Length: 230
Image (cartoon, rainbow, N blue to C red; front, side):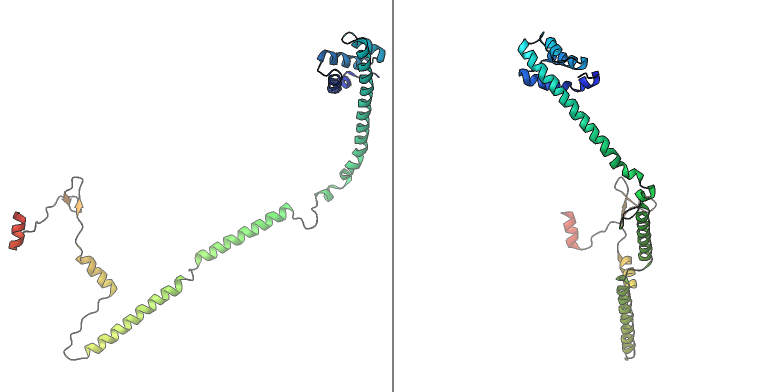
């Protein structure tokens, strides 16, 4: 059975395993000679003669039988697989006969890419509208608190006015003005000492950066004078 050079080279791994199994070790020279016999189309006698230069006659004849029989089996198996693949080809190509419109249509219940994009765009638009609506409105928790504070202030002002009116109607009673929270805060700020401004050298300066001299307090009590002397 003559084989092409390509077919013989494709069988080289199988020939290598066969020689290794026959001898118990690898022999690349014997493998090359066996592949050459297969590619040359040698029969059993010619193959035995070729291998006898590397093995004794009995082993050469036995290995030639294994190589020729096994090579035919390998080629037959490969041809059967190729035939099976050729038969399966037309059956698998039935999908190519279907119209392109049927192949591109999604199955029932499956969303297309365009539908998914539209759903995402609608969801994004709803989120933006919701953000705008929340951003322009006053938080619901702030309105009741502000209303309650304003109502309390109004009631305090009314009660204060009523008390002042009652006390002012009594003879000999000197009416005192009631300080509002704003006036009290202004008075407290006015009574606070002016903060000192120090330059880089630690000297006191005014707001324009001019150095000023602070007035020193001189003790008047005798106890303070004695303490200062000590």
